[in-house]
Image (cartoon, rainbow, N blue to C red; front, top):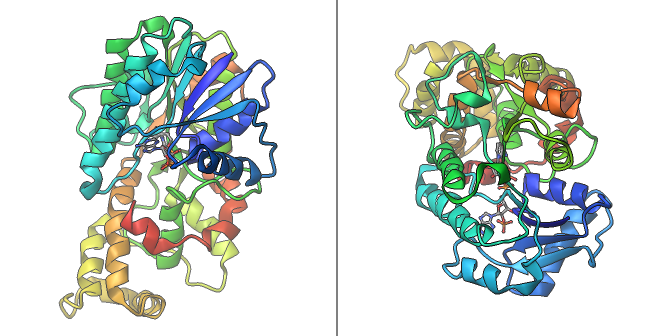
Length: 386
Ligand SMILES: NC(=O)c1ccc[n+]([C@@H]2O[C@H](COP(=O)([O-])OP(=O)(O)OC[C@H]3O[C@@H](n4cnc5c(N)ncnc54)[C@H](OP(=O)(O)O)[C@@H]3O)[C@@H](O)[C@H]2O)c1
């Protein structure tokens, strides 16, 4: 088996790469890497393996310099003779930003970039499987507080909270345009948060939202909504296993499902026990987000109900001397809160059936392995590029 992997330097791709490198059935893994030279691409790969002390076998893992934004990418891949025998493509690269200012880049990477990979893939004689890493959240904002199955999407009528999920849905449609059904494998993780092992997570992406909630303590969100979150090691294991089993479907959620969902309250309880010298979390509902923003601007009218939480406001004043930083955090947090409020759970019975695996542990059970790391996340950096 010869694999071509995009997004290897990311949260999911990095974990998948390490997993695949340990599989003896795989002879070569070519990784599309953005870098100025092959040496710096190798350095990037080396970092992926060294993070958790894994071996970087340079005979097996080979960098291919390339950028999804490069107009010549398809031609470059077609001309690259070492790629002629690729049997499996795993497309994990994407721009995952929720920020409106990044919409154009998100579209360019997730639709334009994917198209370039597909135009090459469809010419590959040896291709068996194109695994596309989608997202379960393509179901859109109108699906609330229920279990979502794979068949329900892609739904062209879905209303999307952010451009990112729209582009991921369009990605699935593009796949069908370019490849025969039997070569398509779509995996749709839910929210990937941290790692269930006691190791440094590969990236603060999404975990940032929990780190921010932990710092704020006064949370403008609903506490009981279901949160379908899974750790990255679980996602990577499922993706790897799916390549080696007889599959009954070509679309799979990789999710916590009905039994292993968590909630903001359950996560907050874990934080309260661990960081026990801080005020306990208090949930004040999403409606208070604008009031908090006004307060941080110094424009909240006297007598507003938010002032009832004065000890929390004092805490925020102390933690964020410069309240404009707090406003930046709120802006970054906004889409995460919207997603969390939807209470979507994603059915995972397909992976349970085909892989015979035990679903992942609920977030409030495994998250304690990430707590020491949460403290080190740079909140402002994450807020500026959510
Ligand atoms: N994280 C989640 O909660 C989540 C949930 C559901 C689905 N997903 C899906 O899972 C996949 C991986 O996400 P992730 O969390 O691993 O994202 P990530 O950590 O942000 O990694 C993104 C990867 O894509 C690469 N990339 C971005 N733009 C590129 C470009 N123009 N050319 C080449 N490579 C480019 C990045 O390379 P550089 O290092 O060079 O930037 C990086 O390797 C995505 O398809 C995402 O939609 C993620």
